Image (cartoon, rainbow, N blue to C red; front, side, top):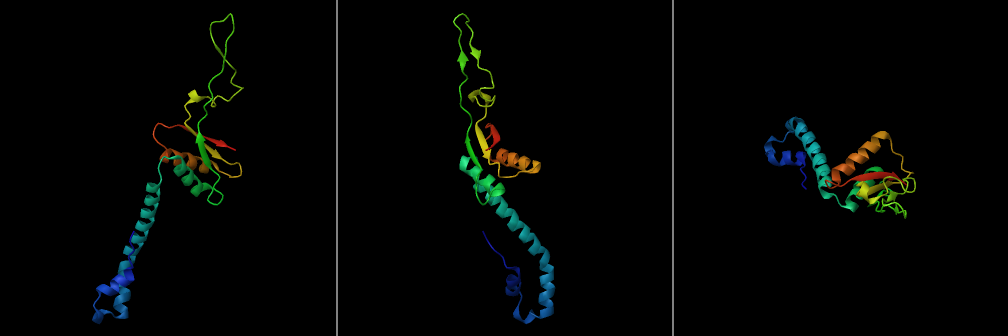
Length: 154
């Protein structure tokens, strides 16, 4: 982006005959508030640039989650939602199909449950309750509107 060295900038604007140590230190003191604001701005701009570099694509969400929760091994990944069709049992006498019991597959395993993607988190990554809330908030922030997700442990 850009970089401003306020001490150098001060000396460049101050005429050479006014550059006494006392005056320079006084002006540096006056500029200290501007330096602090500039540092806060740089941190804010860096954070916003990071947010703008990521979007709702699968790899992008994975990168954000791995940067935050598993920066070294990067084991968090996304996959498509479950896509199993419901299995019907047809009797010869009955005219109505019956669902297989839900204990054959979990209730979220079918494609009509509305889960579009799953965030897989290894059991080795220890997450507190606040971390889980932050993880869900990060996914909600970057995912596309209308997409539904589920977090699961592996």
